[in-house]
Amino acid sequence: MFREEELRQGIELLFYAYRDFTGEPDAILDRHGLGRAHHRAIYFIGRNPGTTVTELLEILRITKQSLSRVLGHLVEHGYVLQRADPADRRRKQLTLSDKGKALEHELTSSQMDRFKRAYADAGEEAVEGFRRVLTGIVNPEDRARIRPPAIRGPGRS
Amino acid sequence: MFREEELRQGIELLFYAYRDFTGEPDAILDRHGLGRAHHRAIYFIGRNPGTTVTELLEILRITKQSLSRVLGHLVEHGYVLQRADPADRRRKQLTLSDKGKALEHELTSSQMDRFKRAYADAGEEAVEGFRRVLTGIVNPEDRARIRPPAIRGPGRS
DNA sequence: GATTTAAGGTCAACCATGTTGACTTAATTA
DNA sequence: TAATTAAGTCAACATGGTTGACCTTAAATC
Image (cartoon, rainbow over all chains, first blue to last red; front, top):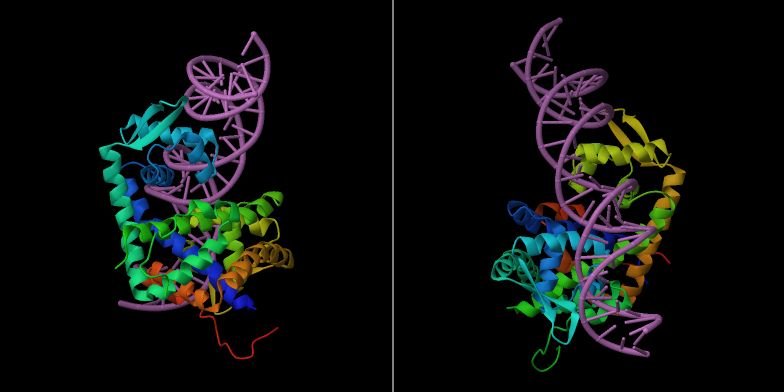
């Protein structure tokens, strides 16, 4: 079993990591006149090009009205493009414009750099442990959303 | 080196884990008429009894005015107690009342349960990897704030 | 002892981002 | 044709951040 001290350490690690993980992007966004909510939308649209509003709502777990405000701004300022899904014209497929892609890249690079260092310092095996634990923290229904790290040579040693 | 896909997976894991990790406490807080900001204050005061406003500001990285609103509410409603530090009477030592401790316990239990399951499912070694990676994500200056998991030995339980 | 610094508090205005609730439109499905 | 679904809209409100200005008390320093 795990002692309270170890469990609290987990809680605190998650708090501090998330705080610092969002710090740099927040500063970048600020220079563009955007906020963290815009970041989330941009990230997941970039990750799932052609995604719809409903899908985004499920990922972000916010209301349509809240997303609408953010998305409207992104479309208006040319970060995000909408086009009707030819198969179901009620749906709008969301994609990033070049401007949106550039910003996404800037934001994600900053966060990937942080992960690069942390992964490299911790080592391959630690990374696998990190994945296993954090996946266990996520609600089971949503674990499928997390893309598998794809194929890794002859199996995970 | 790590491929972009693996780094993005880290980003997404952190996003989903944090989202779900805060979900249950948010619901509990709601029943008490409190919000996430109150949770953070209660947690860190409970964890560091006698801590001061300045110390709390450093941990939470918010402004004095923002904390003041939250802290004022907690004191007013009897969750948090203040007393002057005898060594430096400008400082106020913050502690949880019994009512505050009860709420802290309710909130933290919910989060610890989540960690208990995740840790148990992932295994001891994975937990160590989780710690190593997340510590690397935290800004170096703040790594010292994270308590070491103490000595292993016979432990309690 | 007088001055400066530190800890804390306060008032006001504002902003970002979440919420609820009601209602509309257009397109698809039953 | 009727019901459902995807999306959008308007309004009001809550939470928790921000900046800026200013005050009090206590401690530290000159």
